[in-house]
Image (cartoon, rainbow, N blue to C red):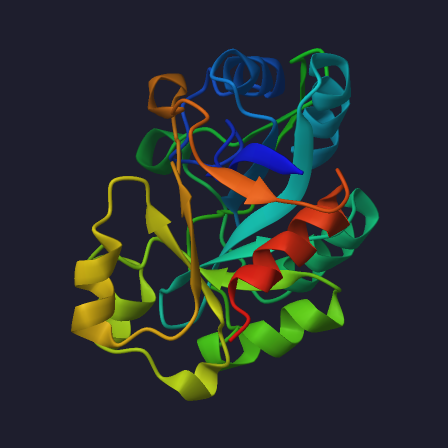
Length: 238
């Protein structure tokens, strides 16, 4: 079954995410854009995933639990997870490996944890946009331990990307699927770095206007987070 997707969106919990990226606004804007599957992938946290999933059930949009992990090398890795319980376990694992520093909203932005009615439950005090102590060479196996999938994020960008930080693609990292931005010239990227694997393209939306129309599709066997993870994995089979 072909479904339209965007597996990289930030809510108002990410300090760089707009305050109006609430669970209802985010999910319903995605529905208006024709997206059937999305992932809420905030920086180093999953705390707005349950609310977004609840809104998604009402709006007819499948929300996949996710996180944009920052490794110790300052590389962003999109982490897709199979269910909210596992996502919460993974969040706790990551929090224990973040620098124990408090957020300064005026400097970095607000970090709002919300319920499905867009009510603020809490303001996250742990700063979320700093690097963890998790190395990029650990991430593939780590996500497999959590029954998820690690995908290097926005590899066509110069900052916070595998290519931008490392300057190449080490096959020993074990990645088989990579994320690009929607307008990326994939062939040029492959020619430059010699990629072996598959690709997904996401918006990395931090505000509502950045949510793009549902033009990209994924072939899923089941309409569930696990089904989406398996579909993305198949893109990297060779």
